[in-house]
Image (cartoon, rainbow, N blue to C red):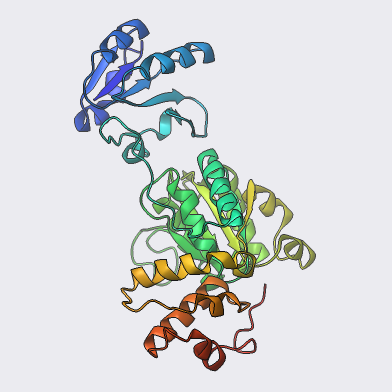
Length: 363
């Protein structure tokens, strides 16, 4: 059930789509809403479409929390960003419908909760990483993720996305974008725009509309490609190739790179204006050598996923290795250990299958 507070005469029309999927009750005053909420005996959300003062909202939230069936307070705003504070969620009015699946999820009177983090590890550095992701994820700002190859940057990007959404975000590998077709791939094209354009085609930004777009290997974008993306990153505006209509598909950008930020500057791999717009926040994913205490947890979790029946016994041998290829290399070695039936002696696999010279990873 959703209890809606609004004095607007048009609110029923605006929320017609919501009434079709949920049981909604409308109240013109907070006092009537509070009276009804005190009698609710099943999970319910409260949606407020009025600009009340912080004091009024705080008092309302305190009152609602006296009912154990109260789940979430949704405040609609004219702003452009969403964020959460405890059971209160602030959402732009024009983004409510696009976020409906995440916001209007009931779970017997408790917060719907997120899935367990895919970032495995109990070390201090991994705990800090998860905390940063949780904090940054709720802010909806653009994010730049840095880290060595194989350290789990894309997993971190999806975790940021999952703070607000349940489905996975689309990922674009910038290294694979053809310079002549980058606009068509990102923004779409209309029929006849170029040779081979046999029909209208939507771009990847439309798939990410209202959600998240992950750009992997951002350093591989040429300055020209970055310039083409700049306007979209700034205000969500773009045009399909061959079309004069300006479209809008605002979404969060999460950029990933395995190049240190200072190197991006020094080698001019990224335009300063482009960097300033994608790096609303920066996250550095730690190398495996900096949290080797997590190796046992990583290995056990991976063995469970792969249904390996004989766990590796000598974890200390794995912890003693430097892992220049990070978690990706670790999992490759774990697969090889089980494939060769050497779970009891991983040192043989490390020495035979992997050497420092075999894995030359560039930071």
